[in-house]
Image 1 (cartoon, rainbow, N blue to C red):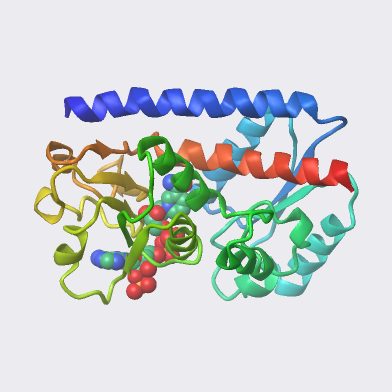
Image 2: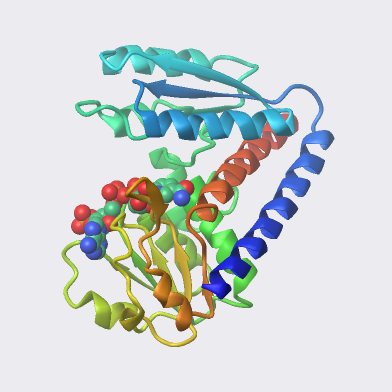
Length: 283
Ligand code: NDP
């Protein structure tokens, strides 16, 4: 438990350092920096995440235009809204808050975003660039934040055995490409994986992104593992991760939940928006 408390202070320092860097970058960019978030419907969790993005943008002096659309809105109308933002000169980045209400084609909607404004890195073009190992694209915020965090903690990833539990397009799959690009040896597990424990026990770096409270227990990891817990689960009104706190007994590092990857993700998103602004300045 003590170790976990220390880790919280440690991650706070990392967050403060990133914030200071972003603040300095913002001052170096001439003119107004603006981006848009489209939220479809009033899902309470999405509303909280959108609020956090707006708040962070405000504290950095970045303008955020929030567009709230009715959840009964059809694909075509959402696409039209994105197209308007694509054509708007004062909008440098576009985010569509996920998940979208059931029945909407997320892939079609995301791929409407102009790749130059794809600060969430989720268009097919951005994901393709990541897959190719290109450095100039936008990378999805959560896995990019996790990679940055892992690199703060590990001197090198070369040859390390990395195990990711969860294969979503939002987290697990892009993170696997990022870790491969860093020369780690990567295994991805999912709900059909057999003998999960045998695989997680081999990990030097274990990333959990599957969303089941405290499923990874101390018997499932080896001594000295670094664990990065992305999971956000609500249990009895509390937020807990995918990893049981008992894992701290064996782990070299265990990231805290809440207060770990969530804030880093929002910072990474701001970094992507600043990247869009810098690219725009060079055009
Ligand atoms: P998805 O539901 O899209 O994907 C979950 C993945 O986990 C799937 O690949 C699924 O397998 C796998 N899975 C589910 N149950 C198990 C299990 N028991 N054993 C092994 N694999 C399992 O979730 P997301 O990727 O969007 O999110 C994952 C978690 O991360 C959630 O808790 C979410 O709240 C959190 N999250 C946190 C963020 C942050 O900023 N901190 C940002 C984004 C997500 P299969 O493919 O076979 O169904």
